[in-house]
Image (tube, rainbow, N blue to C red; front, side, top):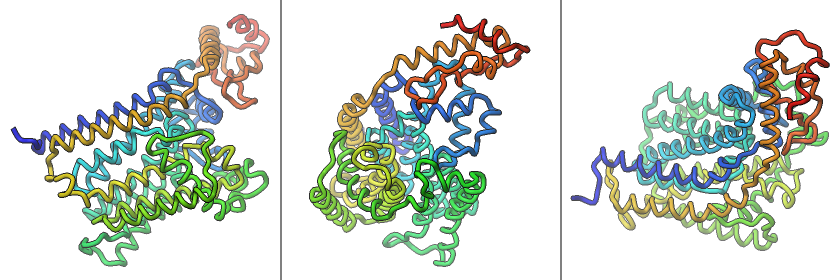
Length: 482
């Protein structure tokens, strides 16, 4: 018996280990699935998507400065698949977990094809998914759209990769389409076109030039055009609401952007959150003073330079750095008016794209150790390699479980309110009361973990076959339901 699997067994072994990593991710977020909740911005997405007609009517309604038609559509789908109001929080939690699992397998495939071996793909998907670094993007429904935007970005990178390898026009057009779709989930993916263009332009050391520079630049313009197409649509349908979003307090979105604050807070979050957070280390109030920030970032830069010099192939390293710096500078520059210490510092949803960048940068340098620490054969996986990934999965789960566990919280009053809405909705269907009449009859019921104006009765769907009824008659039929 050999210590290496054959090609077929290697595929099955990689699938088994990948499923183990998937299971570890689900385990990390099991508390959130067992005791789910929705909060704040979730209310807007879900109540404006009660029916398909509601979804269509609100498809291009901005959320703050974001035009998110695909997120609105996803909310409509969730509401259609979840007829009971009390089941909505769990369905919303599951969406975030499913989104990150999809991202894990996309990372696996992208890295496997880029570096030519399943071992690297398994390492990358584990480092990316078995983590609490960006837990808000998994556990908060509204922030799970960040993860769906990242999934679309990864699809764009896979299409760009396919174009590099095959020069098929269809792959390049698919890349452009993905770069248009990604920010339609959330604006954090606006640089998707730039990231894909950069990937297409970078020629690795020793790589043959299969296309002319002019052809390469023309190909790189396609994902950028995808981004431009989305921006044109978003600005065209928002009637100035995006440019003059209310939470910029009178500033335009351009006027609110501050490059200096963006650079400073990028340095701070690298030291405070994003690097140590990848190891499961965190403290809600942990903010380093500036001398420590400079020292930490300087050490990180030296280590990155050392890794860069060692790496035999650098395309993933370039892409990783672009993901980290591009995402951080855009986000923290746009959030310059938000206090870093009191708010932005703790928003882990902004760590999603940078974490992917760290993973690609790290895994991109691993081929240096091939033949030194491990030996790879194309189409084969050794027991040692499978064991190494298994140990990594276990260590990542142990390191990140505390943060996932302690960040979870539960609001039983929210489920109680949704059960009440559910009972009233059942009576509406029995008596033929439409949703608008029922809401007028019932008045206001504060939704727990919502904003102060969020009325829980907005979750009512009402009767699909309503009868003519006055508000007073509806009130008499519904007021006794507790």
